[in-house]
Image (cartoon, rainbow, N blue to C red; front, side, top):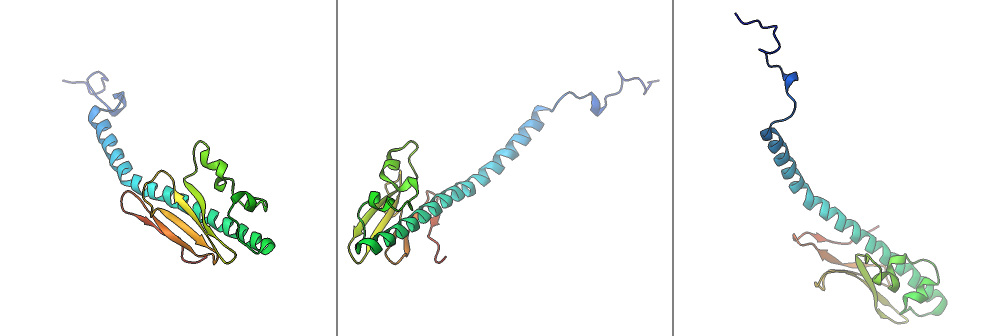
Length: 159
C-alpha cells in the first residue's frame, strides 16, 4: 500500500521550481503579438504630437509676425528680427536646425511683403514635399503630413 502522506511519493504544485519552456514561449508569443498591434498606434501618436508642436510653433511665428508688422508696417523675412519679441520657441530658430538631435520640423519664411507672409514647417528627414504645414497672415494653417502606413495628419480646423 502506498502511503499518501509521504512527500517523496506525492508531487504537489509547490514542488515546482519554475515555468516550463512551453509556458514561457506562449507568454512571449502573446506579448509579441500585443506589442505588434500597439506599435502603429503609438507611432501615430508620436507623429501627431510632433505635428501639433509644429502647428503651435507656426502660431507663435504668426503672433511674432503680427507684432513685427505693428511696429514696422511690413512683415519680416528674418527669424532673428522676430525673436526680438521673445515670442519664438527655441527650436524654430536657425541655430536649432543644426543641433543634435535636430527638431522634427524645419521652419522657413517662404514669402513676405507689406500685405502678407507665408511660413512653412517642413517635416525633417523626408523627401516628400507635401509633408509640410504652412501658415499665412490670416492665421490659417494648411498642409498635411503622410506617414509611411498612409495615415494622414491634418491641422485642426479651428481653435
